[in-house]
Amino acid sequence: MIKHVGLFLQNHLLQIKRKWWSLPLLLLFPIFIIGVMMVLIASFFSMGNKDDVVAVGLVDRDQSEETRFIMQLLEESSSISSVLDIERMDETEAKQAIAENELAAYLLFPDAFIDDLYRGESVELSVVGNRKQSVSSQLVHELANSAVRHISVSQANILTIQQYAKQLGMSEQARDDFMMEQFQSYLMETLGKDQVLTQEDIKNQATASPVNYYGLSAWFGLVTVWLFLMYHFFYKEYSPAIQQRMMLYGVTPLQQFIARFMMMFFIMMLLAIGSFFGFHEWWAWDLAGENIRRVMILIGFYVILLIQFLLLIELVVRSTKLRLFLQFVMMAVLFVASGAVIPTIYFPSYIQDLLNLIFSYHVFVWCEELVLNQRYYADYIPLIGMSAIGGVVVWVLAIWKGRAAS
Image (cartoon, rainbow, N blue to C red; front, side):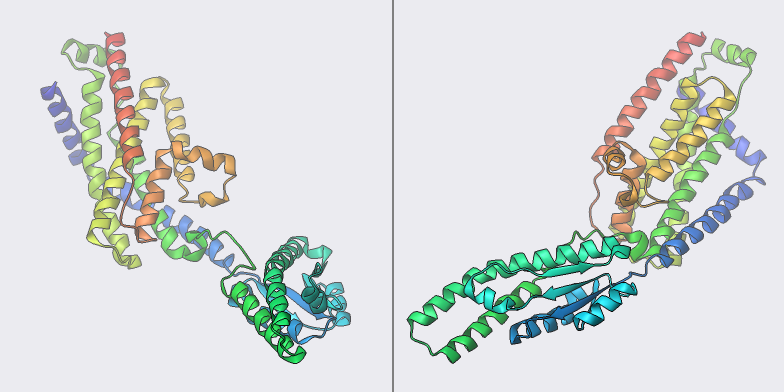
């Protein structure tokens, strides 16, 4: 078996020597195509990266010192200003702005808002929305509900302090000043901890850093295309007569697969490592040496699994044209499912649940974590399991095909 594998490896080397002039074109053409495609996609996400701030009005009917303080704090809060553009105005101006579609909504502090708060009565913030901006209006509505919930929690503490202040015999003016201080303290604590606007922080590297993200995607796609081309460069269809003669000499499909696998893995790792360092210098990725090693391990698993996947289709499908079509389609599906073209957070949730079963997703996610998010670990266990299962399946099918042919 080792002798036959060695003979096929030698044959592949001769094949490279005979067609050395076509290899540069084979390797350079995908660089041009993928480069243009990734630049277009990155440009699209860069244009969509400009966050539209929601315009919101504040109308104060109460006209108390406390409500003026709330409005000032809302205008200056960093946790809110990144999402909402808040401006104080009177009710007539707010209604006019809504009619002209200049505001998504406006918040209305009703009459006696602070008096009701100090008396322990239920308080509410009215929200007047814009039907033309229903999504933004809903965001403002949720903000108002969240603010009222936090004010209600603080209300119980303020009322308790007020009761003790009365029992201590504080004068009305001193008690009012003290209550104002407590109100300000609770409100600033609420806004200072970013509790009014609660949001799930999902860092989308495609929009946060589209150049780096799609630089990594371009390298990942380049490795994918190169492997597909290399596979068909080394693939050779033998006639039934030649296959029969090879079987008489003890040559099996498994030996051919092992030789092709070894040659492709060696060449692809050279191409992957060389191109990665090229991308690393071009995009100035600041990576530690151990992270580069982790990325190479991940891409090694990716190459192994892709070769196994292509060999598996070759073993199952007999028709040459159908096999080529299925291999192309499945390679495209694996590449898209990795998130290299469209980030996976844009996929429907039921598709995201299935991505854990796809090896290209695992490889690209961990490459992204290492290169863009500066993680210092990677989970190889799923890839090890998939590689082992794929190797066993290809081994069994190759032996079965050899016996069936004999």
